[in-house]
Image (cartoon, rainbow, N blue to C red; front, side, top):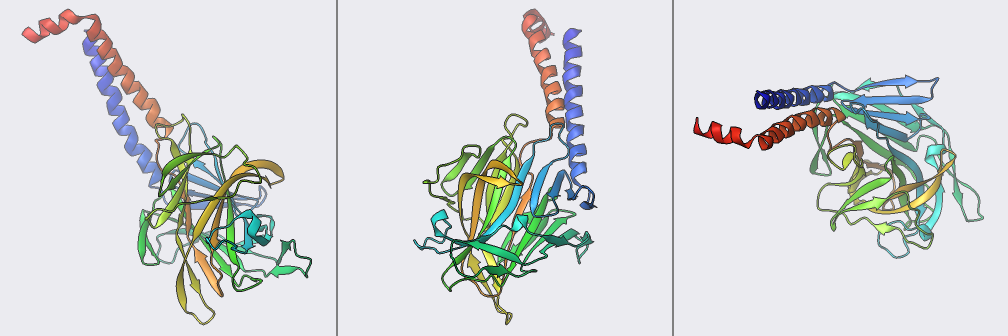
Length: 360
């Protein structure tokens, strides 16, 4: 009798688990939507199980899985644009090559309302640099100003998984993701050989990230500040169209990943005459402290480096959720496993029952 009851308990729990998974997936099937909270000075974009909050209505994004019972927050801040002289011609940014920079997350931005994408496939919102930005430089010369409307972020989320083609290569954007087109126009380069880097600060509430490189995936401790003498590390890019940094969740889910930041390894430049060309995107990274939002914190700083260009450059990073299961899965799964363990325990305590049953 006990064995029968325990078996039924295990079967029931597994059935509940099977039923729970479609319900969680159905949650991800809701179309994207957004709200603008002028009093709270934030914009919230929700797409499936992803909630992304633009703090201060600037390109500082906090995102998390809204289906989880425990919120694990990830932060992505489009921190600065940095012109640099590529002294060693490796295409990547190193701190000692810095020429001048503008803190775009501290600038004044305007934004549109949320709007439907032209083909009805999702929802978008646009952010635009609203005022001229004075670029800081160690040079004693006259200040250099980045004009207003020179930088935009076009943020999109889709109703269903969508396949996109960028520079002739395809990749997909899921429902629990938002795609961000970085648009940079007429950067005031000091010469024709300097390059431009976009600094992206990343932080997880667990302080751990995984770097997915050609040499393999490895853990990165974003809480440990590297010394000023430590050069930025090369991001060894894979053969895939997109490169990825994953945010580690620790012990909360069955996987070590609940979030990611991806970037396409090429960008598109359009000249004033309308001619387009594809340019490579190199990347480097380092763990450093920064006064982000007035508080000194340590981040993984990813530097996306673009060649010298004239005209408008567009690049396509994505943030979202991937890997791991919502906490609901673990609760139900744990109950199912407990039921099966009970069955096993009863069988071990009553070996004669097995032998008798085997002869019937």
